[in-house]
Image 1 (spheres, rainbow, N blue to C red):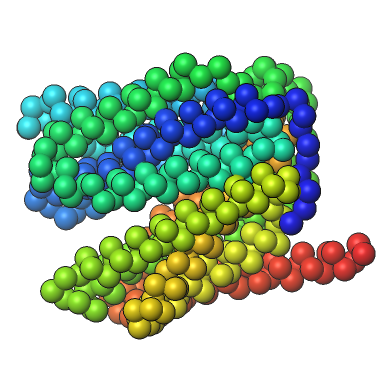
Image 2 (cartoon, rainbow, N blue to C red):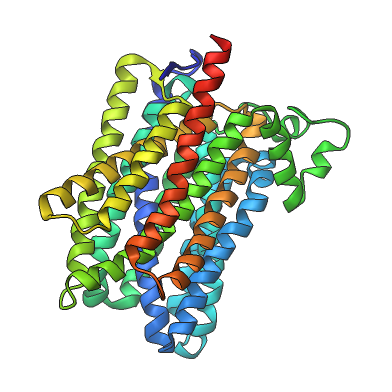
Amino acid sequence: MTVTDQDPGRTGSGMRHFRFLVVGNAVSAYGTYLDMIALSLFAYSLTGSATHTGLFMALRLATSVLTGFGAGSLVSRFDRKRIMVTSDVSQAFALVVLVLAPTAAQAGLLYAVAVVTGAGATLTSVALRSSIPEIVGQDQRVRANALLATGRSLAMVAGFASAGVLISTVGYTGAFLIDAGAFLFSAAVLARLPITTRSRQPAAAAGSGPGSGPGEARRRDGLLAAQLTALRYLRLTPVLLALISLRAADAFGSASHNVGLPVLSTMLDPQHPAAFMSQFWATWAIGNIIAQRFVARWARRTGRTINERAFAAGAALMSVAFILTFTAPPLPLAILVATVAGVADGFTEIAYTTRLQATPDDQRGYVFGFSATAENLGFGVGMVACSFLLEGFSPLTVVTLFHGLAVLLALAMLAALWARRQATA
């Protein structure tokens, strides 16, 4: 761990405003996690087809991947706060239209909702993560990322836990209206906050930074051009490219346990397949929140940040914990393993985001857009690949293969960082 760059220009007012933003983002995240369950179940109940349900989920994920290609250009050229507000309002509008539409039209509208929610989630993530250093200052970004991650973790637990109750009591219409209200609340909070989300005007950002020159702003407008802009910067900072590659491998591995857990749960208890999954994710969430709160307090007390070695070690530990989960250990050990997985997951999320935020503001949006594309693509490819592999191999074998790749890459990164440190010592 290393001492962070100081930015005395930002004071406590930035953190005060940011805490309100955290609340709004957590409410919005609650709507997102509630959506993940409610929309998927609604798609199946409406069409009665597993194929259509799969297409809906695939379209949402594909939209997230494609949006990542252009997100860097958008958050670098336009006001990031407006992008986040527009994303929240658009998702709320899509859900309201779905509720008000005739039943005959709802099946077709579901695909439009998949596009809007997939694009909105990615744009909000890229815009927010690239804005944090400008809202609170570089010296406060570890605390800010920990607060944001804690809010989202609590929202995930609440969203997953309440989905079944809400759908059974108020129906899909009520659940979707609650979703829409969550997004509108987030938009209203953002719109009222007097925050600065960039260090300079978009026009200045578009023409500065590594690799810029005459006509550079025009070249950055296209989807592929945004990725090339990020790569030009990452070529000058290869450690960031290594971090993003490891994060993509981690997302690839995460797909295996997300697909494999329902299979493992059914194998362990065919009569109550949800029991193991509920126990695991609840324990994981507790570990996740513990890590986030610990890091926030540590950063406030020491004023330090998290380096690349800590991220790589955390990524390896997380993958090992998920592999051990699929060995079906005794209950006390299973709780310990799930807690460790949650702690490592929470820690690496903060470490990764904080390190990428050290990028200069005029390049940060492109880097986070590139990262979003890599993460979503890794997760999407992993979902497809492990779905096929689980037909012929055990969940333990598939998860070991997928997460094992992340462990090897993390160890290789640790070895490379150690060698570089020895060479410069």
